Each structure stands twice: as structure tokens, then as C-alpha cells.
Image 1 (spheres, rainbow, N blue to C red):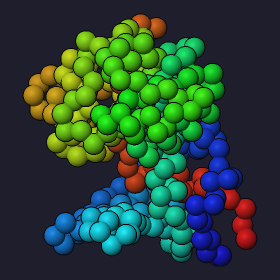
Image 2: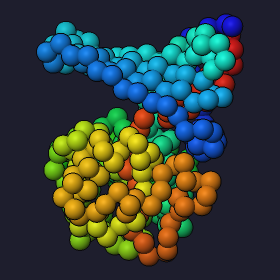
Image 3: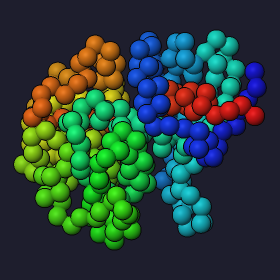
Amino acid sequence: MTLQFIGPEAAAHLDWLALTRALEDGHLRPRGDIRDSFLYRGDDTVLSRAAWIDGLGIAVKTALLFPGNLDRGLPNMSGIVTLFDDATGQPSAILDFMLVTKWKTAADSLLAALKLAPPGVETILLVGAGRVSASMIEAYSAGFPDAKFEIWNRSPGRAEAMTSDRVTPVRDLAEAVGRADIVATATMSTNPVIRGDWITPGTHLDLIGAYRSDMREVDDAAISKAALFVDSRETTLAHIGEMLIPIGDGVISEQDVRADFYDIASGAFTRPSPEAITIAKNGGGAHLDLMTAHYIRDAVPAT
């Protein structure tokens, strides 16, 4: 078996809608076995995520976070993704960490939006002006080609730097939430930035940023009034504050989460009514990295 090395240039061969189809197909397979492990040395962290899906293969994604690298003029995050053959366990591809992470994260949210967003999406609000929001502009543009984008950031200058013919910075977050068809949050906040009383019927919220047990982007009012969905119950309900905190406080229960991506085939992962407010929590997971890496490997011509 020839070992492929796949770098950032592979993006030229990739397609957002094709990846969402690959993710949907991946969830028709047996549920993945996934594990995360951590190593620490002071502020430095090594995270290894492994997934094995019977019939698809194995992926090990290693992320290294070294905050001190910023003072050395180096990126503070690096890593690598390795794919292994399902039958033999032999390595088949080594992929660029940021390539897999970008496409996995954005396609995860795009798949949820294609299932849950209201018809005729016209306005998409991005909350946070970092790398993830830039990726979401690409992904959402593939799924909702006629939509325009608004973007809000706590520091307005970063939002203004993303201005284009399709992207408009906004200052009043409450007003922007109220007129958006899709609200996508990509912040590092531990306190909710979106309030439930700002949200109008029919809105879809895509929650991307929170990944720790102490992080939240929407308040209890939003969680209480929405139809709730997650990409994976296993990686969100007991691990990410967005769901963990309101469940622990008795605001909602695990049973209030209607579906995850493994329920797409049954038809449960769908908008319950035209006026419903829907929330999809993007929690990621090594099984999604595996599905994404497998798609990328197959999409890139062998050299």
C-alpha cells in the first residue's frame, strides 16, 4: 500500500457538498469507537483523538498546543492526521492537521444547516471573526449560494477586516440576530453571547465555538425554546458546557435532544415546523475526522 502525504494544497480538489454527503454516508455505517487522550507539561498540551469505524478504517489525529510558540514566532498549534487501513492496520495516508480540521468543522455545521435551516435562507449572521467564521463563509456559500452574510465581533475591527461584496460587518448584535435566518457562533466565550429573547421564530442556530465543559455561547432561554440537535450525543452531552450546564441545572434533559447525525437516516434530524427555532451543537469528534480524512484521501489524485 502506497502511503500518501496530503498537504494544504489538496483543498483545490475538495467540495463542501460532496463532503457533507460523505459525512451523511459515514453515519450509515456502524457507530464509531472513539477515544481522546491528553498529555500535559505546564501550559503545553498533546491531544490524541482516535476513531475506528468498521469498514471505513482508523484515524489518529494528534494536536499539539504550545502557547509559548507565539513568542518564538511559531504557530501555537500543530498536528497531523494519520489514516490506517481497516483490514490490515497499515498506514494509508498522512494528512495536514489544519486541512482536516477546517473541512471537518465547517462541513459538520453545513450538514446540520442543510437539514435544519428554514427554506429560502437570505441572511446568515456570523458571531466571531476568526478562522472558523472564514471557513463557514466558504461552506455556507456552497449550501446557500444566494445568502448574504453579516458578521459581528466583540472587537469591531476584526469584523470590518472581513468586509467583502457578500459580507457586511454589524455593530448591534441583538438586531442582527433578530433578522438572520441562520446564526453561527464561533467564539471562545464562557458566558453566553446570544440571548433567547433576541431570536425570532424560524431561525436556525449553529453553535460551533464552545468545546470545554465551562464554555457556552447561548443562554438558557435560547436552549429552552429551541428544538435541540447535536452532531454526536457521545461527544457533546456530557462534555461541552453548551449542553452539559443546562442539563446539570435541570433546564433541559438529555431526552430533549431530538437527534444526532446517526438519526439522519430515520428522518429524525429535521426541522419540526416552519416556525421552530432550531439549535445544532457542533461538537466534533474523532469519527468525523476519520470520515473527513477518508473523503479527502479519496478526492485527491494519487501521485
